[in-house]
Length: 175
Ligand SMILES: [Zn+2]
Image 1 (cartoon, rainbow, N blue to C red):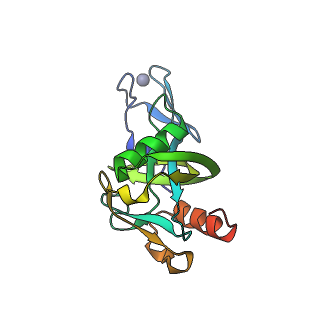
Image 2 (tube, helix red, strand yellow):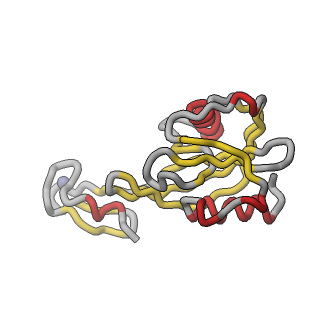
């Protein structure tokens, strides 16, 4: 496992090289005393179904996991609620307006981009959409289509957290 701090050689506050391990989630600078924590980031993912209880999966347009299947969603912005993040991401990625947003469960995940691994806590929501005919892919989504539970090729799901979450959603009848 890549630790987030493996990519940091210098103190981000004073630039000293005397910056090293302190505990599991923090590095300390022995020059200025700065203690830098790598906290996990919040992310959201939406379980959207059609009238036949098929699940909407998106093909990722960008790295990481480019070309693989994923649930729509993304990182929560500063000062944003998770529910607001779901609405914003679905508007940005699929051009759709969301009706109800209902929290399901969470899964830890790792998201490596630009040589830096972000530990995330993915929050899964069941989402009701006003009009599925409005779906128009943009942003980091290349394509989106509905899959019956039996037709999902789990080897094409990019992130492990998404695989286990989708299995839970299907096995526990959360759709
Ligand atoms: Zn320092």
